[in-house]
Image 1: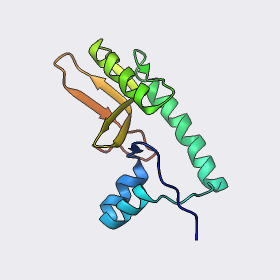
Image 2: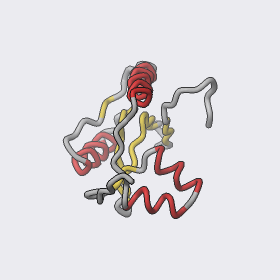
Image 3: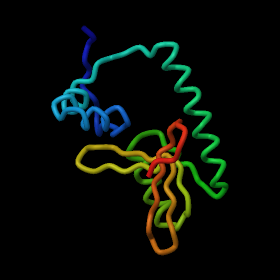
Length: 129
């Protein structure tokens, strides 16, 4: 059995947690409040590397994009808010926190009418809405 650790501060609502919640609400609670420490396998590390390369490629489609770079979650949220208020059209890694849940999106596109498109970059063979 793997050791659990209590998360500090807001928990990132990542793909793993989202999928856990779709499968079982109890699993979502356990994975969120008592996550297990796991060492990534070589295959998982390679998938991560490929995912990073794919994200870089996707970002290249938005040359006006600005990356939200920050030391911690609170700074990332403040930076995101400042960039949105400055009418920055495209953000990479926009960060939001609500009810102690952190959510980041790979690409956020802000239109002139204040409508927003969020893109989550995943590998696959077709675009999913």
